Length: 527
Image (cartoon, rainbow, N blue to C red; front, side, top):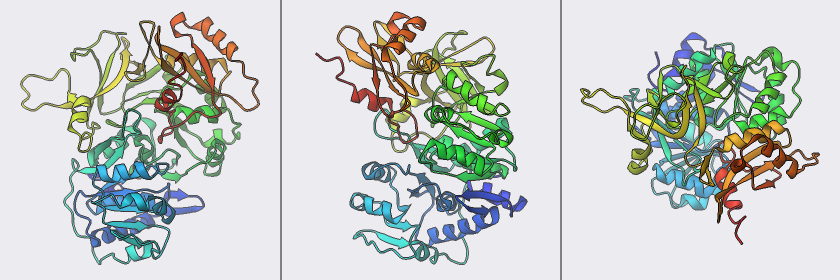
């Protein structure tokens, strides 16, 4: 069985070398071709003095060099840091400095935008450009190499590197919704355990074709690649411009599995889907936020033979729960039960277990719990704390992830999301979950997207503001939407205002950026 990330590839190479591992646009790479590229890169990385556990950042869209770089860094003994390609120079420089990146793999155009910021990254010594044989751009303090110049460095043999499953494998930076992005440190064990768990309940096999539309800097996105490597499935790489591109890709590549977040699902639900998609799309998954029931209903109608899995996860522990498709109609509001090889608890502030239906904090324990936040003991101590209910005789304390999310559990063990502590709206003395209001907005059919936020208000504490986007040809009536809320929500949940934007802002992981919306409308009720 594989111990380290790159061994997912070497194990699969023995079983099916000619099978297609990765597709990008109109080019396919077999497991054997991918392994050859990975080995050459790993040798070249060692030749430019990559040391064990040093960090290598990959700042690229989804393409074959992105995939091979992750695996090559692992094989050479390093730690890969996927940088979301939508980030700009200041955010990229923050990541490079925060985890002391030594080598950056990127493209010529991206380097041009980064050049000035890189002068302030003292640990960085080499930049590798995947789209040029020889580097034309020279930087005063850095070695810049084109792809051929880099791969020509490869030696005759890879130097052996001691690697065990608890070693660092990757650092994923959170989207920074509560401040500067934090680097979540993943071990090889974390990544492989996540691939095994998800592929087990989704029943992913070698015949599957997974469409990777989410960024690899997002754990949910990275898992599309790792589950494919583990099972021998094909991973189809895609950076889409429009939601229509995703629907077209489903048909073109005969995709069997699609993972997305609620804002993308809301857009896909409004588009026509070719009938043939239903013949091959075996399953769909949602994570990164609660799926509105109205959106889910539309999606299931488009592909009635597909299974839909509602999931919940957090970067610090990757994935925590899933709801089996046969339970969606029975308990549509549930986020399910624990994924394989994880225990999920709902506890009070003192760590004691909550009673059924009593709101408490979700705590995750098991092999998916990451190694904490890079170089940040204070923030790590806030989120990574002793697991509740440990036996007093254990000499070492087991650490679990305390999610910061409020949930409830029913008598049968099914979990229900209430809200994030930092997203909850405090109005008129009540704590209100944004998702409860948004559910009504989506069900009305009057808005395409919706985000409920709390804005400072002199008498209410916070007033409920709902920001929506609507279809371009829609005759939008905000009062009709407020009337719908009045009919279905208590008075303290009714929006004080409805604001309309052409598009709701997204954070780098594709989720609606509530923090940015709160800043944008911060002065709405100031006199």
